Image 1 (tube, one colour):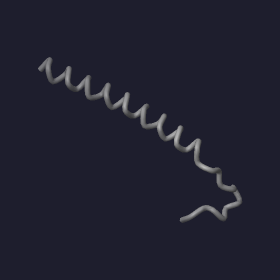
Image 2: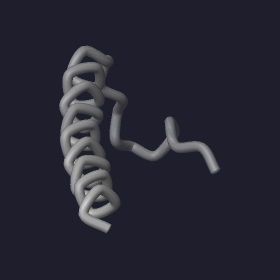
Image 3: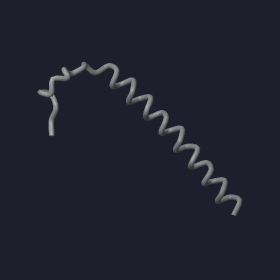
Image 4: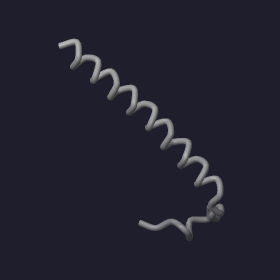
Length: 45
């Protein structure tokens, strides 16, 4: 039972670290994208 709890804690920790990493990568990539005008013509859907 202790092994299962340890693995669960490891899994949760890895998910948190990778989630933060994904947010940082998206923030860095989106910072390099050109800004669109906010007049509504560029919106789709």
